[in-house]
Image (cartoon, rainbow, N blue to C red; front, side, top):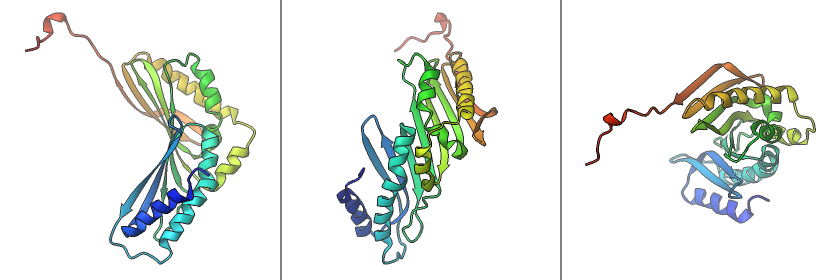
Length: 224
């Protein structure tokens, strides 16, 4: 188990003692720290059903085995999952908002080979990906973020798939390589692409970039 029952019991007991209505639960998976962080979005002043907190407890346990652990194994990177909670304390497992982030470290020399291996899991979710953001700093790529809406019931079956959709993976790698060529021309770079039917749309994008230009020495202002 990822969570001990004691941890879940303490979380639910705290919500109960404060008579809180849970609007959504955010789950941050941090592989570099080997930890999971739980964040709650709460509201107050609502009349709740008698079994409301029992439902929350059961849904957290269900989330762990149903989609959270398989998702960790599938995409192999840090992510934030946001799941809405209804008035009965039931989680909306069919519409989980995911932001998965791949950190590109400076020591990675062969970017496309690295990404081909590391994106082979998340590319199985291609039909659920809405947007991709590529970030760069100091003329080097730093992060690739995938935003998607997943049905938790499908994650286990995606994990079991043995084949990777090479057509979509190659298209992703091609456009990420284009971004990498653009990044080396800029000091800072963020590019957000829409994803349509699993394909990153390079033509429709939102781009932020910046460059630093040195001024002549005679314009330098002396410090007081």
